[in-house]
Image (tube, rainbow, N blue to C red):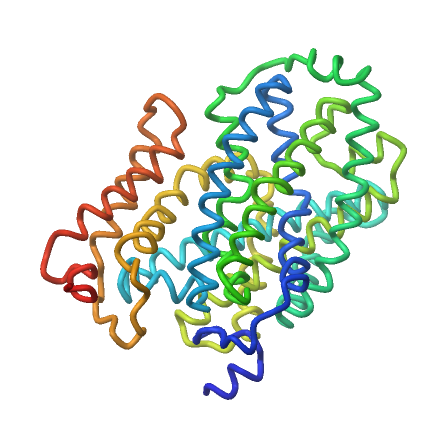
Length: 421
């Protein structure tokens, strides 16, 4: 069995050996498909429709710091252990409790895939009306599944296409948009028809990447050569590149009134770049979502990676057929209020419970770690409690605190079992 895992190169049920770790440039290319993506651009557009530009920038900054902290901790844990997110959560919730958390998060990634499929189909239909949007969305899922099945190498190659296509033309669009508004003074003078609360704007910024930061990022960073590489890429992606995508999306929406970047570019006379962004900006992240989901579920149900990828593709196809992408904004807010609690438990474990290192998987004999599940429940409740400030901060901080406190309770506490000294 071990030989088969090594031959596929995905290491779905074992840690990635050091001699199989990727070059930093290759890892950057593989991850770039999840940064240079239209869903981040559209999240930024939703922010642009809901706030003046100064407020939007403040919300993006708060979201960027929040996501950077999470990305660095999650990435370092994965690089240090070489394990997938699906393997790591066994330590946080127990063998059976982790299946509930893993199933939920992996399923949310397929929701993202359906959103990407809908956006890709819509973009292609806008530029080539003869191709039905609905049918193209379904075909898109098949394409996503095909490349996800081939793993990291295929995704790295596709990711290198996303960087110039979205990065370059996104910046061009932003410059055109600012010029069309009369310069920075015109952009700063923009006032939306109706404003969203600051907390909701922060929620959109965090929701743009929170699901990926939790489950998908560790599945990639386990291929990093060391924790410094994982931390450096986490900072680059979350503190610089993802905020840039949000800003570009916001400027495009303010300048043209369109929420989708392909439509923004078309309105600016850049139809062909708009079509390319509509294709590669959705294909890159969608294939990674399926890849990560297949890893988590494959490890959970003990099924080979490519077979599980096909199953994930079928589920994503069903969600796409149900027009799931229409609920994009609601989906973002939901994730931003729930996922931080799950991450909070993981952060508490990495920084406190298993601060001396994760024990071997064979040592884990806890079936249900109620402490982790209670911490998640408390975090989610506080996220929806309407407390002053930013709900996501309440969510993650409360989960961290509750997890650490409860780890002092009971003889079966992981902190007591593995580190009696």
